[in-house]
Length: 94
Image (tube, rainbow, N blue to C red; front, side, top):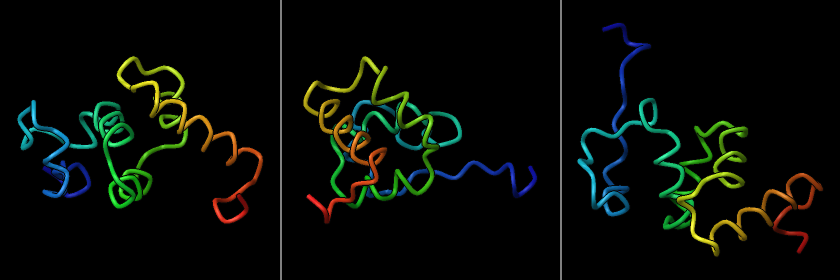
C-alpha cells in the first residue's frame, strides 16, 4: 500500500468516546462523519482542536446542521460557534 494511501488510526486518547465500537477499526478516512459527531457531542477542547485540524469545513457544517446524532445542546452550541465564525467574531471578542 502506498504511504499516501495508508489509513492512520485514531489517537488512543479518543478511545473513551468510542466505547460501543471496535476502536481499532476506526479511521478518519473511513468514518469522518461518525468521528466528528462523537467529538462534537462529547469531546473536550483538546479533542475538538484535533478534530478541527483535519475536518473539512463543509463536513463540519453538514454535521452541525444535518446530523441526527448530535444532541440538542451540542447542536445549538456548534451553531452559535459557526454563526460567530461567519460574522468574523472570535472567542476573545465575546
